[in-house]
Length: 118
Image 1 (cartoon, one colour):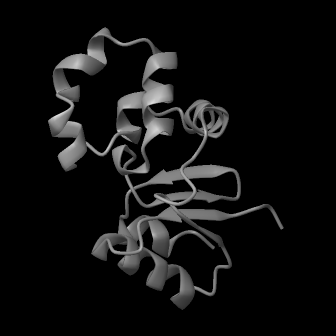
Image 2: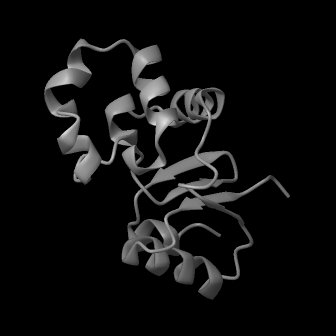
């Protein structure tokens, strides 16, 4: 079995729903609290490249910290390396949950997508 990882913020209701869905589907994952075990730059870079998503998709754009740091204006001027370093600096900047499952990357929670994971 590939290493399936679920990166979440346990106090987040959306993360809780997503985790419950994984349990209902009997999908085993390694749990990582995004605040305690924030992803490192190398991990984020690998997931970003694997995902084919725009790097901005990894940012929690509705988060308080995103707004406080004025990232809507700042991100376009930043290099990918600077954005990855910023994401790795604080887990609350990362959109969650983040599911690494069978080599695929899923950002956020969409029930229909989780329903088709098996």
